[in-house]
Every structure is written in structure tokens, then in C-alpha cells.
Image 1: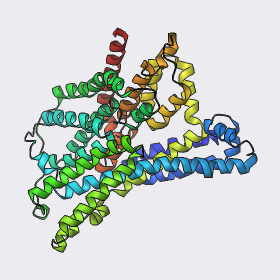
Image 2: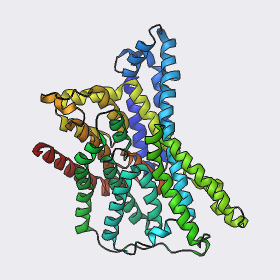
Image 3: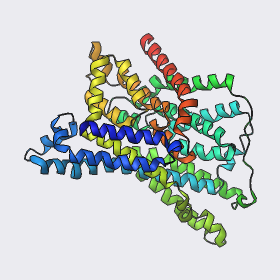
Image 4: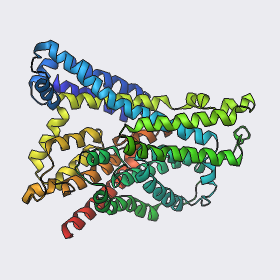
Length: 460
């Protein structure tokens, strides 16, 4: 059963990768493996947990010394693990739903027109550099997921051809992941390392900014020699004529961007989960929208009121997240991911190789449980520790490099990061198409940034 869980995940992952040839939506495949992994887990729970690979089960037995037998195992899986992971997954889903709705509200009010009107160039490579740098710094202030959602909405106003827009959206994913890696609030994994005390805010910026910048610039440099031509802007159709004044466009752009920027401030101030800040921002924008549009004609309100905009939010993307994160959570709970982390430690034994491997693996499975596994395997060493263990002190090389690799390694595959999954869902980007056209570019940037980090850390 332990191996069967892995087989189910791999088969489901293959179905997601082959979505277009199979003509089966990836959300359906994700929901199936998200459920089947837990079904296999609970049916074979007694044998799986007795293997001793699940840290969560060991912790449960310590906190529940009187729990024994199959009843205790079922209590652990159903009432402890599923509820625990559902809480974590719910935070991500509500965050995603809130962010997607806010972006859609701004888009419906033509708020992004204020930005797109400022971008005059139609040269592909020049536009790509502009959007990549915009993404890089926005993802450090917001986070890579929110930034990707915003930029994909922008791209729909700037690029008409689907294949070209796929390429630009994919490069936005690379830039968003690179930008999120050097900021303590730019990616879930850096937030985890920051809150856990493995890194401090100033040092993560100092140590990882340059490698992250190189990670983005290397693919852009390669494309500067190969990408030619201009983009075709979408034509404004009669039915798409704006229903908002310029003042309303500016208002909702400010409200949207301000609401997204408010989220990390809310988290830092209240220590509550980010999704609460996102939902608070959405609620405020919703109220203001109701007030602004209350006296307008019905056809205008039908397009601009948040309650109607919610019906246009991409629900399959949310369900895809639910399925894939549920499947990974089952593998984390049963111990497969913990076993993988131990294997890396035993076989590699070098902090740079371990971190590089974690980064590559994060393109296949979610980087959050991989980083969580690394944090559990390696306690933060005391200040002043010498030798090999000095790499594990606060702000040590292992933790800084882990922030870089876990943040940027997910770009190697479209499904390897929250930003990639969001772009894949919003633009229906094909998994195989991404592998053929983007993965090698992402790998060149990933290795280039890693080399820069190794050289700078060794020299300094």
C-alpha cells in the first residue's frame, strides 16, 4: 500500500501532464488522485504506519500515549491529519480565490488599461524584459502567486496570439518565482524559513537577491538572441467598450493593488493567515463597488458588481489546486516525502547538492512539504558552531540556498510552483508545450543563479 500510493500519484501526475492528448481536464485527474491517495492510505494504514516512516504518526503517539490499535490509526488519519492538511490547503485556496476575484474586479473595471496604455512597445523581446522586471519586483512585494494572476490578466490586454501569450505567461512564472525567492514574503517557502527562524529578513535579501536576479536574466539573455518580431495587440470589440470612467478605472486599480499589498502588512501586524487579509481586502472592494454602482443601469451593474464577477472566476483552477495539494498531503502524512528527504541526505551529503536536488524535486511535487521536511531533518544549529554544522546556523548557507532552490526550482515544470499552476489554469497552458519550450530556459537560469550563489558565498 505504501508503494501503491506513489504509483497512484505518478499515474495521476502523468494524466495531468498528458491533459491535451487524453482530452481529460487536469482538474478531474487532480481530484481523483487527491482522493485515491487518501483512500489507499487509510485502507492500508496499519501496515503503512508500522513501517515507521511517518513523523506525524510518531508525534501523534507521543501526544496520545493511550491511543492503540486500528481505532487510533483512524483517529490519526481522519480527525488529525485530514483536518490539519485541509486547514493548510484551505488557506491556499481561499487566498487564491480572493486574489483571483480582486484581479477580475480590476480587470472588469478596465483598471489594467491604465498600465497597458503606458506600455507602448510591441517588440516581443523588449516587452518581455519590461514584464519580467515588473514581475520580479512585484512578486517580492506581494508573492509569486498573486503577481502571476495580476500579470496574466495584463497579458490578455497586451498579447492577442494564444501561443505567444503562453510563452509570455511562462516567462512571467520564471520571473515571479525568482522574485519570490529573495523576499521573506515573496514565496510560501521563504515565509516558512523566515517564521521558523532559519533565516532573517535582511540576510535573505542580501544573500539571495543576486542569484535570483541571475536566474531571471539568463533566460532573458538567451531569448534576446533568438526572439524576433512584434506582438499583436487584442482589438477592442464593440461589446467590450468600457463601461467605466477614467476615475473609476484609477480607483479600482488603486483599490486592487492596494488590497493585494495590504495582505503581507496584515499578516505581519496580526500574525493571522494571509488568506484572511485577502478576504478582508475583497470585502472592502466589494462594499465600495456596491456603493459606486448602486445608481447605474442594470446592464452596467450586471457586468461590474462583484457578485456577478464571482461567477466568472476560474473554479476549475481552484479544484485543481485542491486535488494536487491533497495528494501531496497524503504522501507527506504517510512518510514517502520524509523517506525521500532522508535518501537525499544519505546519498548526497553535500549541502549544495541536497538543496539543488530539493529544487529539482520541487518541480515535481510541492516545494512546501519538501522545505518542511528539510526543516524537520536539520535543526537550526547554535551560533558559533564550526565545521559542517555551521551551514545550519541561522542565515547559514544551507538555509539561504534552500530558499533559492525551492523558490526557483519549481519553474522547471509548469506544475512545479503555485505560480505555474495558476498560469496553467488561467491560460490553459499545455504541460508538454511548456517542457519543450520553457524547461531548458528555466534550467539555465536555475543553474546560473546557483553558480552565482556558490561563488559569492565561497568568496565572501
